[in-house]
Image (cartoon, rainbow over all chains, first blue to last red; front, side):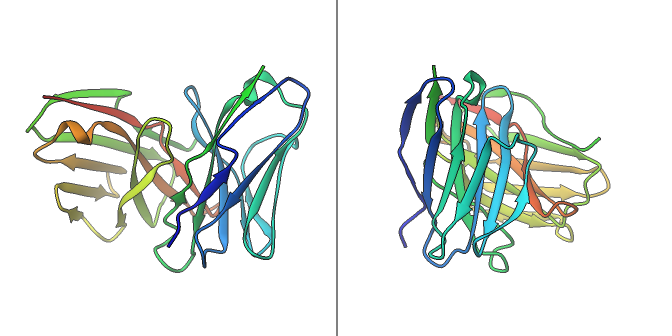
Length: 114
Length: 112
């Protein structure tokens, strides 16, 4: 099976802009979670989507949003970018009920905000 | 408050020795705990899962223990090799919020 894919791999934006990141889960996985990883804060949970519905949300401002499509692909959007949004954004897919929510991660999107 | 802590930011050991990494948690009652490996610039890769009713789990040179009384998991790599150098993350299920919480990771370096 193909792994989790994320596009783009690298992105450079300026403050105030918005960005959309994309994630394609492993075939058959219906849950997609998004994480932000920074050196200072580690891996932090943003939100999880399951069957096109947001099931869980972390402690991030409303500028961070996401959605999931009927084919389980997911997008994450960050509006009004701030310097502190520079991070590695990771998407992970899982199949709840099979493997107890083991997360299969994509390679990440490295976002730099200037 | 709820916390998940890994013993140190970095651990350096000699090739061939056993590396032991620690994960402690506070105010969680996880049904299971997971360990992941992350190489620079890449996403974490799942290694092992241990359930609350399991004391120990092994996979090749890897061994994980889970002590729910101490609220601690230990991750061992025996006969360590330079290729084992990476950051290792523990993660547990926050059942109250139905999500996975990750520790900050321990960067392991194995010197030849």
